Image 1 (cartoon, one colour):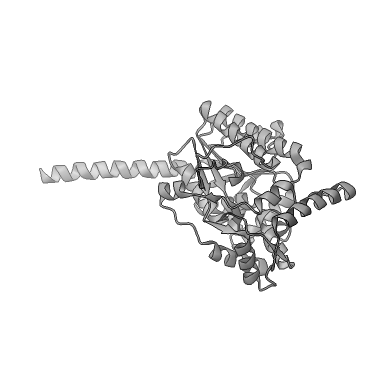
Image 2 (spheres, rainbow, N blue to C red; image 1 turned 180 degrees about the horizontal axis):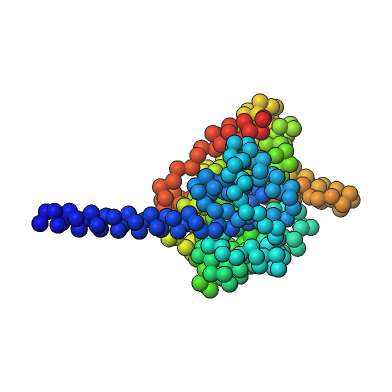
Length: 366
């Protein structure tokens, strides 16, 4: 009798083991599409997924972008993994180019976006971030994609009311409050994700803070959040006492992968490690780079004058804005942002920003 029970138990365990193995194999052989794989988040995500044995298809608009991603893999001595990426030329705003991209795709990480705080870029922001995301959602629905992960931003989070002191995922967006064109475009993109959910698409949204991570090449250090290191290295003299959320790019991609492999859908998650003042972050970066520490406090009236002067220069010399009204406001904002929701869900511990800055600075000095 004991032998019979053992045999039955052994058969059950074997069936369960075979089922788990089959499920794992099915996932490993799924085709995963990554948009924005030539950017900071997308390139790190591709590396992370390939290290986990996943199959990756990525889209690009120009071959220079591919080389930037290759540089990241070289930086981490993983160039052999880079060669396994299936690259297809496409643009998220060009519907015909996306037709073959979605063939046999099981999951999609939508990281592609246009980032600008220049009011002159309003039309391009809307076309890329809203219309482009709508195209991705439509192709996911048409091709029965199993799940979509969309990378949004803390710029789309709600606005605190008088009795509230911390911004969370449920904080309501107030359309009457001032928001940058970038924030509005990303908020509109999120609306496309929620539309997809109503039409049957499984999806999750992540809202990272300012993402800190190494750029694979010199061009990348002049754009996005990486530009902070370049400006400090070049002797940035000013700082402000406003604060916001910061997070490591590696933490972001780890959480994205976890959410996509979980049964979570129809939810958004704030991803920040810490709320820190710009003063502390800039001075920490300067210390890590061993350069002059920013020492001049840019008060509100100074940034108010600066964005107006920058506007005049942009009109006279027809150049892109370096400081907009919304950016000036953000530099002095002190709203607290919470990422407790994701911490509770997956018992996740974010890497301290001091350590992140040290790591990124080491890459920068190379």
